[in-house]
Amino acid sequence: MKGQLIAIITGTILAVLGTNLPASANSMVAEILAAHNKYRQKVGVPPLTWSEQLAKDAQEWANYLAKQGKFEHSGVKGQGENLWMGTAGYFSYTQMVDGWGSEKRYFVNKTFPDVSSNGNWHDVGHYTQMIWKNTKQVGCATANGSEGTVLVCRYSPPGNFIGQRVY
Image (tube, rainbow, N blue to C red):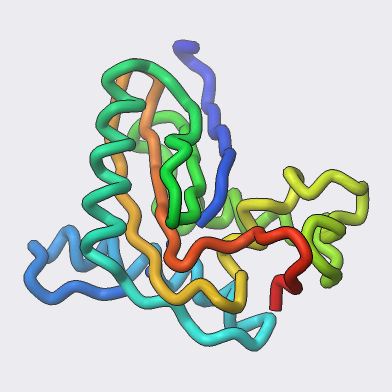
């Protein structure tokens, strides 16, 4: 897709700050947390915190996706997951997360899965994972491959449970 700017999103979601990280990693963590938590603040749910374990798990999956040239959910149990892909080096972490946040325009605050104004919860599933009231932690990682940059965010506890309110 040479010459084209692309961004693809799919998935579920994330958590907060590590202190034993290099400065560039701390800056990534801070930016991703701020991007997530601005959406959470708007709906009145507590901020996410960073999980090194979730970030490690996310890194393993991001590396796999980049190496294989794939874009699919891991199917891991016990964690939420959001995926994003776009042109390498073009998007900030905030822009990546805002891709999921843009789903807010279709969100209606009802019981999951009846949370989308168009009747398709998949159109808001990334956003709902980010603002899910019971989710406390997030960890994210990126990897570059032939298809671009992949961002994987993992969330604990996961969200998007049938029969529950988002917040």
